[in-house]
Length: 292
Image (cartoon, rainbow, N blue to C red; front, side):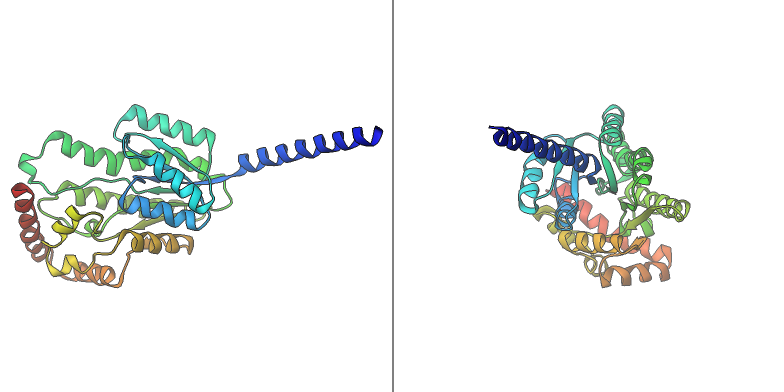
């Protein structure tokens, strides 16, 4: 009887140890935050990070089935996946998300992927259209970065990846506000990289070209000139290049050989020539949109 009692007490002790270990592991568990994670590049980045055995916190707008993606990724890669449905252009929702993330999670990577663009003549663009680009591409990115930086600094090694665009490198008629917002992302990222260079946080900025994320986008891409079309890669390829380079310590990422070549061409050619080229291509795209 004493032996049976000893076995029971021993089993209880082992269970307490297991529970304690699980609590400690959960408390020390690290997460990668990805905004705009429900589709396109964000979805590919989620899969790529999961394949690297990184636990995820996925952010998307409500109604984009992020719960289904989170469950699928969790099962496939055997990692923990949390998700939040948040409108990052809404101040109240953005600040609430920052509060949740900074208090409840240990985060060692922030990927600011959420962004919005489009083709529109500036004169007739609505205030809402312009506001959404500025609020999402600039304000949400800056706010998340600043609010989560104290959490990132607590880790042994941490990363910030901001998704800019090839459009960062030059003005584009009929996009107007979008390339300006991505130029901001580039400048902000490089400045923050220098500021944090001697800390544990690496700041990287990626400049993908266009990506054929759905049939509608593919149709638009076919209207571009050869220079723009040559930079097109799949979201999976871009995600793989981005995560590999970030983890290898790269601070500027231009995916693909043609992307790098296009960057050189943009630097060499006169701005007026590029403006004329982009205007012709984007005006053609704008006409296709109006005709649809």
